[in-house]
Image 1 (cartoon, helix red, strand yellow):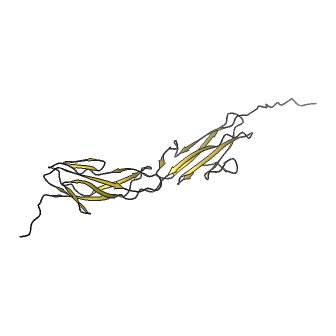
Image 2 (tube, one colour; image 1 turned 60 degrees about the horizontal axis):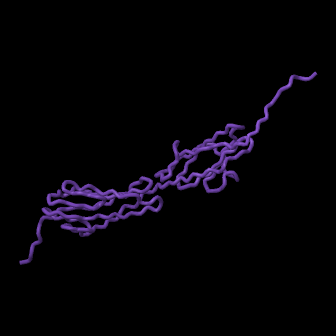
Image 3 (spheres, helix red, strand yellow; image 1 turned 90 degrees about the horizontal axis):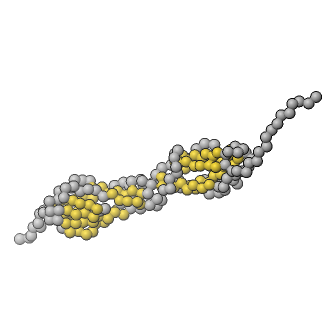
Length: 212
């Protein structure tokens, strides 16, 4: 006597899985990050099902000995993540690549140079301006950032009677004597802000005195 037959289905699967990457739960940015990020990988397979995702962080081929992904991992420095998903019958997707740029160091505090002085003077520590007369001064900041680079500088508003366009200052004859400190900062491409460099601005309305 023979049992009732039990059948099974045989289906071809020639399609590889598809995968994605996320940084802190969202899209990985094309630009710079200012701190470490948690990287997660995900994949799906409409055929035989997902077997594993393999990845590397040293630029090598993940299908040749990469780490099997199990949980999100931290990236704290600029890293190229490579990964590939494999299904249960051995179909592997093409290796995917994501550059993650991390700069966790703020720029250096800027050095300052003073030029374009009209009815104003810089003595190495104080910017003097003549009261009762209009004038100009240009403050030029210089900073360094070895990783993402300096993106911008921020110059202070000096108050009533003063104008400022990216460090090009003008003052009117009625300009106020600014309060202190007057801070200049640099921001890098990861959004980190430097320590400030301050300069002192002081009104001078007194003429020199001669010798008798």
